Image: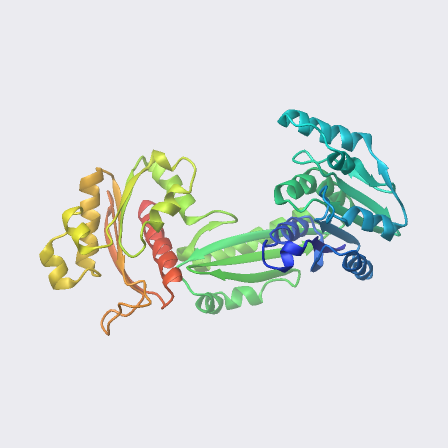
Length: 410
């Protein structure tokens, strides 16, 4: 089955709002065995909505729409759907009761505009919105399925998850199975060369996608076929073989993150940690503390951006910086040792580098970064040379540092 997603709203076309709905919907549809053939964004215009629907019905079995269901004059999706299906708006008691319930819970009185949200096309099934006042709508016409949902992301997700996906999953005859392997510390082209023979041997119904981002390459296997259990078995066998080739670069799977996995290892070991950051400016601490429960192992951080802070707060020797420079193996080691003394933790990460775009030299070009990790298992310092883009350098340095700690804790 093929689907088309139509997102409606002037705000999408002027860059005021980013369309995150389509990405989320496409992902969950794909996981349900439904291929998204096209995504279209259009304005709050009767003509554009009608044209998009007429085009979508020529190549899609399922047409999903978001947006234009609010109570204001510019929300015209319902009336346009009535025109498209040659029907009329009728009062729906169930939808009204839901709107009334939400307003009572918030201590507000219903207005005529809000009451109008209970008016829906006569030929549709109302999909109650637990998170808002605009109901979703389900249509079955001429062998096609149409569904219309609010554009507010959390309202759309609620209706998709509760009402639409269960209905669509009953109709789908194809299973799609994904498994995503997460790698760090290896470039996309090097990875492709390393697993070329393995990739060539994949059966035609299992596809591999390389999904690179700064510091990380995701390898996503997608199997398509009628038998879900068989697909899962075959993909698992291929992944086992893949691990034998690239295990040193793999840190997790699916939606896992380096900071989450490292946090789990810290919790399991009973260790605590702190960071001493120069070029990353606290970004490592930010990633670590983005994980719920990180207070169990993360104690704090010093952003030692200046040499004065490196010396007077972390205890780095003035002689070390004078002789070797702030961006050096010796300096990051003393930074890590200093943070362990100051915070009385088990583990430390220290980073110093040249994020750019200025500050590089012939000996230490922009992107040069030294990282030290100290744990009860020992010390490790490494030099990295990233690129010339400041933002990417900061993220890549942070991920490299966390991955070094992860490997020490394994």
